[in-house]
Image 1 (spheres, one colour):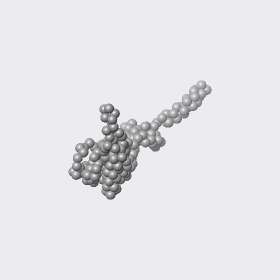
Image 2 (cartoon, rainbow, N blue to C red):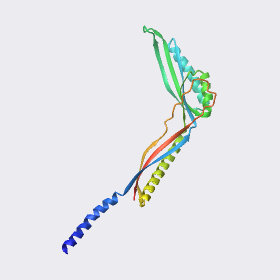
Image 3 (cartoon, one colour):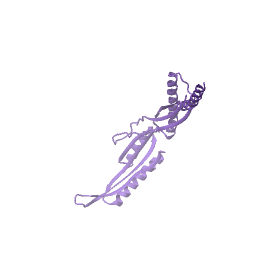
Image 4 (cartoon, one colour):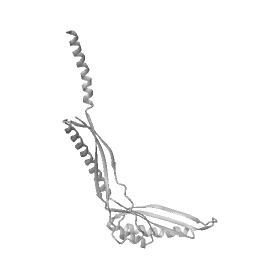
Length: 221
């Protein structure tokens, strides 16, 4: 009789830590995905001036005059985020290392509503811009931040739905979320648009950008 009693006590003592370990391990980990598509509102354009001349001073002066006209026009058209992206002046040599002249280049980047971009670029070309280095379409900063928030919400909801589906199939019930981790939020990288350097009076049409997010939940059940 004493042997059975001792065995019962031993079994109870062993069961408690095992049961506690099992309870601690009853955690489901799920990863949710969220995606939001945003219409683009802005055109980001880079235009430049490239000049070749006999002297460095001549080239530098001509570039400065043209760029000043371009910047004034962009300010008058209320372009945003105007900044210089290139500025160079270098000598040109022939086959026998004789000095042939100088080559200078300067470029400026700016943002405008897509509906205005074509006409403004036409105007810049008329005022001396002879290079169009880049054109890409983007959503506004405000829209991107709102898209990021929505993508995170959708990712969290997706993770919860996955957990509910799995636990319901196993006839189990979720108890609480014990950990939340934002794995990533991917803001879209604008894709440059290739186009001929010609008059842009034809309206420019933008596209869409996609914001993605991943959220991981650990749910006790």
